[in-house]
Length: 241
Image 1 (cartoon, rainbow, N blue to C red):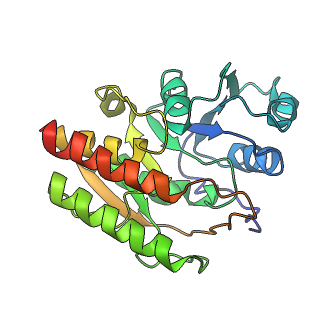
Image 2 (image 1 turned 45 degrees about the vertical axis):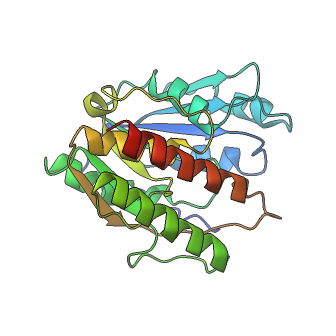
Image 3 (image 1 turned 90 degrees about the horizontal axis):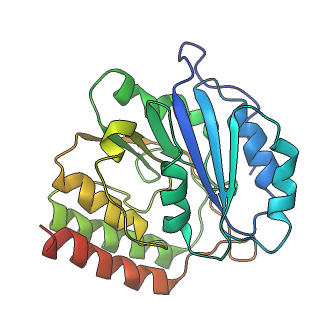
C-alpha cells in the first residue's frame, strides 16, 4: 500500500490515543508509526510489541525519544487481544482507536471515524470495509467468512453491523473503561462487539478504505481464528446476556 502523505482534518485538535498491537512487522512498523504521528488528531501513540522475534522491537527504538510515543513489550507472545488490553490500560486521550501495524488501514481517515464521536452522536465507531470505501480485491472465502461471522454476531447482539472483523474501532475512553476484556487473540473482535451491545452503547459505522495483504505479505489471521470467533460470539453474545 502507498500511504497518502497528507494529514487529517486540521480542524480537529489532538484528542486520540492510537493503540498498535504488533508482532513481527519489522518491514512496516517504522512507516506506520511515522504516518500515524503525522495525523493531526493524534495525541499519543501506544505501541505494544507482543514479543516479536524479527527485529520489530529494535526498529521501534528509533521512536523511543518521541514525546507522544509509549512503547511496551510483552515478555512472551500472548496475542492481539492481550496486546490491546495492555495498550488500552495506558491510553489517556478522550478517544481510543485500534491501528494494525501493517499497511492495510489508512490513518489519514481518522478524522472520518472521529466525526460521530466529536458531534456526540456515538460512543463507538466501527470502520466498515464493505460499504463504499476503496478496497483491494483479495480472498473470496475470507469475505464469505466475514459475512457469516458478522451475520451471526448481529443475530446474537441485535446490532446491524456490516464488518465486525474490522481493525478500525474507535471508542470514547470512558466507554471503553467500562468493558472488561478477556480474549487474548483475534477473539477480541466479537468479544468487544458483544460487550458494546450489552452496554447499549451508541454504535456508528463509517466507510473506510482497505488495502488488504496476502499471506505472502504477512497476513496472520487463519480459519482457526474464524472458529474461535464463532465460539466467542456464542459465549459473549448469547450465554453472557
